[in-house]
Length: 331
Ligand code: NDP
Ligand code: GDR
Image (cartoon, rainbow, N blue to C red; front, side, top):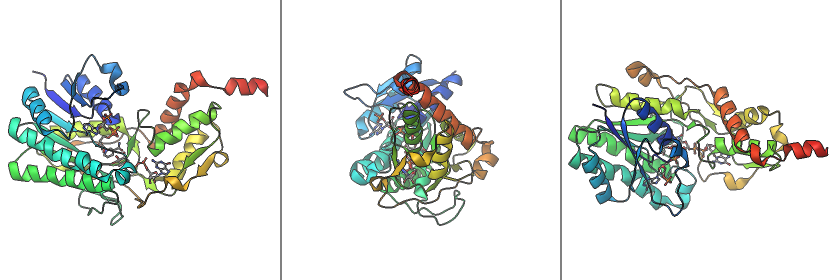
């Protein structure tokens, strides 16, 4: 019999890749989305008739309980969250409600209505925050540097606590930054690759960015959703770091992305203090040894490949609006 999975936040970057992976593996997939006045199902449009889309909000306990009770999932992947770090300073309480307490609401729904379900919590390398140890691994202490990261620390420990208190199969994946052509436009990687494509097509001349010195361990989202699934197939529940073991500055990403279409980034990038953060996370570098040893997870996509794929995708997406040929003809 096929397994049933429930994914919260299926309309997000990771949700869409995870839904594809689980469909490939023969799962019956349920994915939650929030009601919006205009539909935002773009990332799951291509699989919309293969998954069961259900409306739910992590703020609503009764809705989560009813959902879990009726679906009786074998596996629950909690990917829904207010996930943009800067928004967490302007909306700290909302972020705490969604990203922190939302995890407890979902765990309560599972505990009461489907306690045998395996649970995955989307924890984050942002929890490490201020560098206390490099590379960061499962035993590295947390020092969150934003309301988002503080909420994620709550989500992480409530997951650990439900595992220990109620013997639930609850895992927390501490994932480092992962990107793709489906990444939201406000995150720095996609902002850069979309900006590069706009400049390449003559739609813009400059790209305004903040801190180019911060370092991130960037991987490909498709590789990371595979790790989520592998975690829930292990014999025992545990917490795992998932990262590439490489770190790069934002500046390196910028150089590679502009270079991919033959542009000189220094002619186009403008530093805008508006994009600096009240407290920055300077350096993230993950050590995924535990995940590799426990279930053989390794990233397949390199940093260079990731940048190149994202630029290519954005250049293709904007080709229809290009003013490039007009410029060339006029010149
Ligand atoms: P996205 O921002 O792309 O997706 C987040 C999803 O959560 C969206 O589907 C969004 O729905 C949904 N959501 C937000 N608030 C609520 C709510 N109150 N109730 C129900 N759904 C809600 O994030 P990613 O796919 O990149 O990340 C997935 C998860 O992994 C997040 O929890 C994120 O914090 C975490 N994470 C991400 C990393 C990364 O590098 N991508 C690294 C480490 C952790 P809507 O479309 O309606 O807004
Ligand atoms: P992050 O991702 O905060 O690491 O969180 P983001 O891409 O927003 O920032 C990465 C780094 O780039 C610097 N930066 C800028 N960032 C943005 N967004 N816009 C800019 O113009 C800009 N200029 C420089 C930032 O200061 C930062 O240092 C992501 C999210 O997916 C989280 O949900 C997840 O938990 C973590 O990754 C791991």
